[in-house]
Structures are given as structure tokens and as C-alpha cells.
Image (cartoon, rainbow, N blue to C red; front, side, top):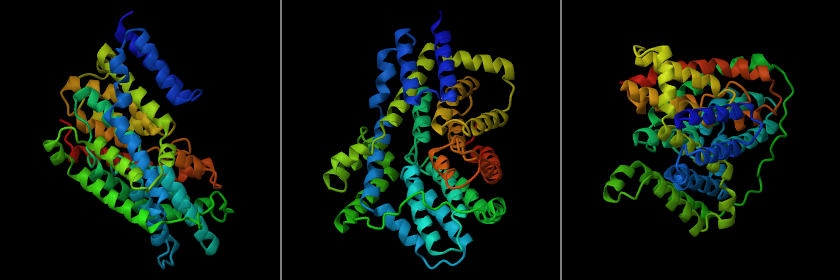
Length: 429
């Protein structure tokens, strides 16, 4: 059997197993990659090169940095300080917590940020009985997901998309590639929460009894001033290096976002901001294995011609005369729907290879398409199945229908915003 056909069969089975969720995603991806190797669909070198590749090193290093920021109490202090401001109106505090969550999620794991902010909010709700935690938690969960697109290191979806994009066109996302558009998308979310979501939520759950015993706030958190200061210095230097990474790379080609992240992670350990043992605990091997294996599968689809075959089949159905905007809109809508039931990274890794092949064949701007598709993958906020943050939010006395009533409108709005904004900022042709 032809290798391009074999690659599509393996890819199709992989999709089905991802959707059914009967086996761990890293196991499915790694097994699919091994089968591709055994059937000569992809070489051993191409299959495993990403296990020590730039994207994997970047994500692993950022996990350590995020763990250090959390362990030193920096994130906690910032959050606690802001939320202790003399704010009387609940709606104003909801808006501030949504904004704070989005900003922190640009640099930390969204699940860590979610648990951190919610623990503080639940403590405030115990102190002020007029506050209802249900008005806060769902906006916080959504902001933790959408805010991750502000920078390349906010979550796994952008690095995943960047790695796949690099396999196809040899060009990856930069640290702030999506920042401009993401700021707009996050502002839309914050406006929705403040203007529409707050009164809508009060109508949806009315006087429903709160469940505010999900997390225990770390009132006894130990903050070392010296570690705290060192962490701030490391974080500031790292962000400055990310901003000027292109200029630094022109001097030394070995310096890139992955190198900077790795150096920063090492400094966190060497300066005592976090112990080596705790740093290793901060690395999520499931994410790294899944990410690396997924990029290996993408290499198999490219090298075997499977992605091109799939693109040719699809183009024979929709025709080469389709407008770039319509094609882009179709991909964004497909991803926005799928990501409500699959993880955002899984959705992007399944759709992006097809999109890249089609746009390359049509001579379109693959880079622009990839930005839109990657960001659409983070719109999985309409169901509790979409992300870990939303799944945790579902345990705080929300009903499944609450997610649809509260989150579906903003999901539609954000999808329309992506379809409108991306082509203006990043031309499709």
C-alpha cells in the first residue's frame, strides 16, 4: 500500500481515538508514531527529532519558570494585592479578576492561574456574603483559556501550531506574534463579562446555593523576599530577551525563544528560586510526549505525501475557486466547534496539517491562516469538556446548561471577531 494512504489511515485512527478518549492522548500519539515508523511512513530521525526540538524545550522550560513563579509566591502576591483593593461593586471585581486571569495566563499554566485566583475569590466570598462565587468562577475559567494566546508560552496550543507550521513552511510563531489580536479577543471577553455576562449569569443561577469549598487558600504561604526579588529580576530579563530575540539571534543564531526559556529555567534553579526536585515536578511529561509525538505524526504526513493527498481530496470537493476569506472562515468555524469537545491542542494538531497543505497548494498566506486556526483552538469555552479549567469550574455547582447559556454567546462573538480581525492584521493572500 502507498505510504501516503497508510499515513492517512493511521492519522484517521488517531483522530477517532482522540475523540473517543478511551486511551490517554500521549499513548495514542506515541503508538501512532511508532506504527508510522514500522510501516516506513516516516524515518526514525524525522519521527523523533521533535522530542528534543525547539518547541518541546520551550514548553518544558516554561513549565519550570511557571512553577518557580508560583513557588516563590510572586503570582500569589500580585493576585492578592490587586484583589485586596477597596472595591465595593461585585461587577467591578468580576471584571478585574477576568482581566487579571487573562494577563497571568499569558505566562503561567492556565490551570495554575485558575486555581490561584479562585482560591482568593472564594475566600473573599466567605468574608463578603453579598458576593456570589458563581458570578466569578466561570469568567475566570474562560479568561484562563483565552488569555493563554497573548504570548507563545501561555499554553500548549500556540507552540503546537508553531511546530507544525515550521514543518510545512519553515517559519514559526514568534513570542508576541498573536499578542495584538489576542489583546482584542481578550478585551471582547472582558467587555462581554462586564456588560452582558454579569447580569446574564445572575439570571441563570439566580439564588443557587454556592459551593465555595473547592480550594483551600494558602494563607500560610511562605514568601522569601530574596527569592521573590530574584524571581522578578529573572522574569523581567527573560521578557526583555523575548522582545529582542530577533536582534539577539542576528548576533548568535543559536539564541531563540527556546534557548532563552531554557536559560531562564536554569537560572530559577541555580539562584535558588526553586529546587531542582520541585522544578522536575513542574514538568508535565504527558504534555511533552503528546506534543513531540504529534509533531512527529505531522512530519509523517508531510514526508509521505499524506497531507497533500488529503488536501487534494478536499479541494476536489470545494473547488480551487473558493475565496480565501471563505476558506479561512470554514477552518476557523470547524476548529471552534471541535475544540468544544476535544482539547485545544489536539484540535489544532488534527486540523492544521490539512489547512497547511491546502493553503500552500493554493498559494495563500499559510502563516496567517495558521494564526487564525491556532487562536480558534482556544475558543473551547462553551462546554465543561473543553479544558481542565472549565472542567474544574463545573464542580462549583454549575449545570451543563449554564455553560451553554453563559459561554456560547461569547464563543460565537469571539469566532466572528477572529474571522474579521485576522485577515485585516495578517493578509490571507
